[in-house]
Image (cartoon, rainbow, N blue to C red):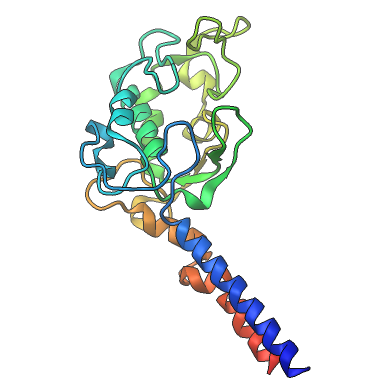
Length: 246
């Protein structure tokens, strides 16, 4: 092969690999383009109550986290009490879910374009740890709801979500027979049910204390295994092509 052509190909491969690595690293620490998230993660020392674990590096503001703890907050005008008053233990999980969604800077591997008018991006199939999904279901199973997909299909004529006319309030377990049904269906497959536990390092934790454990999980999924992000996003291909160009 002509030497100048070989050098050009090598340069292009190096450039592609570099851009891929930068993109992958960014996905380890980024905010989705949603309704309330800020553009880039930053320390937010005053995050409210259940959202406090994200205070060292967050995609949310203190105001957002305070509203996340309110019924019918301005965030989405969503009414948790659409089938009677939601129990406190169940509501705690939805608050934690909101904190996770609004504040997490390590959701990059699961961010995809969204078709809704109120956000440009969403998360899909985030692998939740078994403990978080099962405890969420366990603490809500005595509550009531009228829908399995809470993302769409509500009656918003009053300004807040109400059950559609063709629905009726049922016990939680009639709508969601299992933890998997609930975690995967309630937010249009935003979450993926797994049998992975928190000590596996392979699932995302909604509930944690201390340093955020989810960066390492995101890095694992970006790399497709224990290899580094750089190796997984171009350098392995680069090595093979360089060998071919010799």
